[in-house]
Image (cartoon, rainbow, N blue to C red; front, side):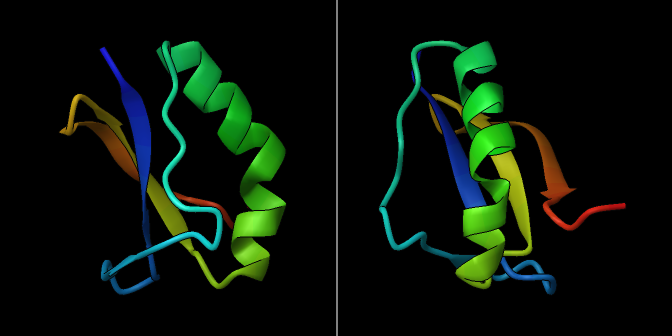
Length: 67
């Protein structure tokens, strides 16, 4: 299994990260990474993220903006 994030603008359009696509061996690793990286992603203009397992949507979109 490979876990990845799909990045989106606020309108739901897909956008890429300047660092490309990160792949993670577990859901926990992917979630830890997004928790550490969301500020950098926001600075790139990314508004939300969708968690994917082997390309299938698990959950999201999840806003990266603080509540």
